[in-house]
Image (cartoon, rainbow, N blue to C red; front, top):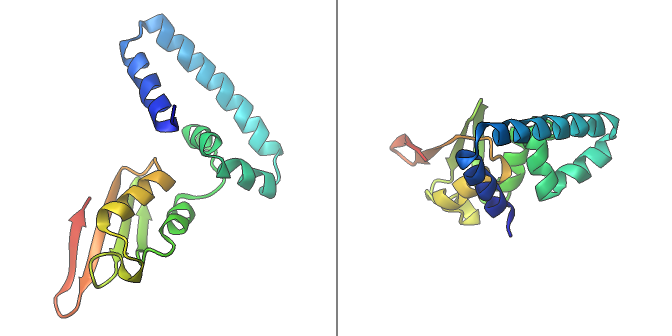
Length: 144
């Protein structure tokens, strides 16, 4: 089962769970969060980066606000080669500029593909705003 499928299953179960079960899940989450906090505090930069490179561990680190790599860096890494440029990261909003061709520049990344790449790299991002510069027209904005 994929990570996203597992997360969806957990969320679905929690929505239907009785209050004591939700309280148990929260207590376990808090305990695991404390354990991860201690692990990350003991890890050097190299180990922290290796841990963050694992999809499942990265998700747990994000869940507990412990990911060692900031949102902007993760998004920039995910967009490398697409021609998209990070204009700003403001809270849960990422603003991007696509190439003049409107498809992400020379890398051929469509707005949908770029949006997916951002969400995969930084699931905590709630909104992706695409700013396109068109020759002679100025910039247009689309919120994705």
